[in-house]
Image 1: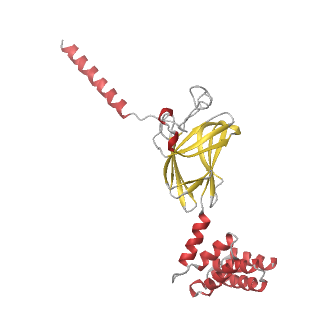
Image 2: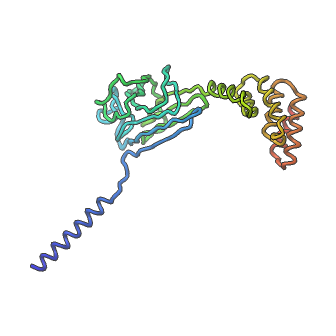
Image 3: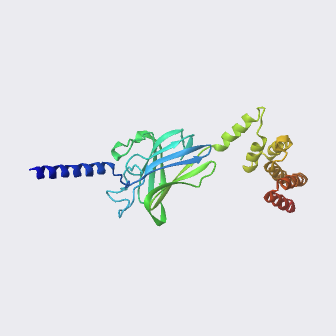
Length: 282
C-alpha cells in the first residue's frame, strides 16, 4: 500500500511538471505577423499583417485564397494600413487614419479594398458600404515562386509609392500618392516671412525639384552672404550649380573657386576634386 501511494505521488508529480512545461512552451507562428513602418512623403504608412505560406497549396483553390471571394489579405487577423497623412489611392482621397486592407483575388485581376472596418478577419464580416477605396489591379506573373505571402513598399519617391502584394507566382500593385510638393511649398512661403530664414534649404528644394531658379539664386546668394555660412561647403557647392544652371558661368566659377578655398582649409579632398571638375566642365 505504501509502495502504491509513493508510485501515485511520483506519477502525479511527473504529470504536474509536464503540464507546467507545456504551459511555458512557446511555439513558432505558422503564419508570422509582420509590421512595417515606411516613411512616405512627410509622414509614414504602417502595415500590419500575418504571412501565410503555400505549404503545398495553390492560391485560387476552394480552401486557400479562393478566387472571387473576399480575403482578409493575410492570415490570423485583419490586415491594416495606417496613414499618418492624407493620401490618394485611385482617384480617392483617403484621410489620415487606420484602415482595413482587403482583396478579392482572381486569376487575371484582383479587387483591392481599403475599408473603414479594421476588424474584418472573416469574409462574412465584410460590408461593402464600409469601403473607402475599391480599385482593380491587374495580375503580374512572377518568374520566381513566392512561398510566403509578402506585402512590400516599392518604387518609393517623395510623392508616390506602390504597395505590392505577392504570393505564389502572382503579384498586384496598389499605387499610393501624396501631395508632398504643395505642402513643402507652403512651408517655405510661411517660414521665409519669419526672422530666421532657411535660405539654403529653400534654395536646395527649388533646385532639386526644378522650381523657379531665379528665386533659388536669390535665396542661395542670401545664404552665402550669411557669416554663419562663410565656411559651408554645401552652400557654395549649391550656389555654383544654381549659377551654372542659370547660365552665369562667371558666378558659377567664382562660387566653385570659393568652394575650393573652403575645402582646402578643411582638408576635404572630395569637395576640392568636385569643384575642380566642375570648373573644367564650364
